[in-house]
Length: 459
Ligand code: ARG
Image 1 (cartoon, protein in one colour):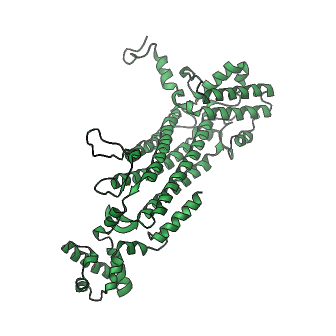
Image 2 (cartoon, rainbow, N blue to C red):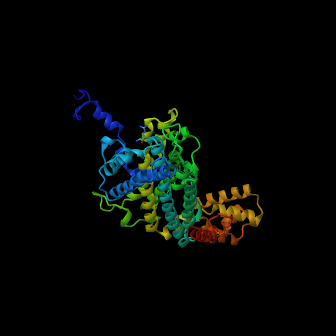
Image 3 (cartoon, protein in one colour):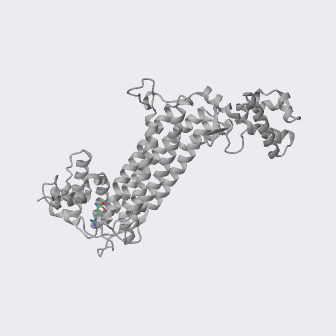
């Protein structure tokens, strides 16, 4: 009889609830192909080591191949009563080949099996994300090359600071994404050790060859401690933390796209491909894709904190808490993949309004630093004094509600008598950016070279 307090939806007693809380097949079915690959490597090694006969191993391998076909074609029937992917596959194998299937689990446990499957899945996912990150970098670098000389305002404190170029701004994200790729690559290097053979937690008395299974599955070596092999999930944590940092980069860029696309900024527009209309306000074009990239960073960061919290109190070795490692990671990494695809599309789609960007670049006395630098270079003023003189000139122009370049020479000389009329050359935004030739600076010549360099490296 079902529990009176909470059993309304259950036909039978607590065992139905037990099945529901215990089962992981609802999400770990995603590990099916990795599970089969791991089992194939394991059984080949068992035969090689004389632990199972060649005939049994061949039957098992054939059965596993048949199951893979069923899974790939969508005909495999997953059963919750069988709890997880490991037992679903093994049970189907028994149906297909009979008693020999029972030999597959020799010298293995679900503990090393799941540690293996998840590592393989994370490794595959890192490789797929790396390709997507590369594509986004390429889209950014191509746009950056096209806009190496397109002047826009650079901001600090969200206030116009100094003119930069649109290309320079885009290349900032190419650099961030390069570090994201390198963090994922680092995680991949550390995770690339094979836990298979750790068995439940203590290793096994069978004469297994862990080097062989590690090599067959593309790992650099077997893991060195059986307890560690089945109990840590730091490979997931590292990958999620790299993913969370990447998601934060994408989120910041998404926020900029949202701002740029407002009528108030008007720096850039997205086409119908990445915007939606409002059901009530006909004039609206909402940058939903960018907003969702910004929003999804929340669940990606959440998956990282969630798993850190799951792991932090667990004594060695495996506890069932660790089954909670998967859903968050699947969701987070799939979300990141979607965000990368959306960002790549938006970058290709983004149309900058060059005239507005340029006008804004000159607003807010953005070339004041250029004026101060001119006073240092040409009149040999100490920088602090030049800063002060420039401040007075800005105040003078602001009082008249005009730009610095609209002050007359006489007005300028009323503040600093030695100013000459060649000062006007540095007050324009084009000259300002062109002068930023220090390594890594915003000068169009720099930006062009960096964008070309990136495009060559990304090939
Ligand atoms: N479904 C389990 C998980 O994801 C597999 C490992 C089960 N191990 C065990 N000792 N019950 O963690």
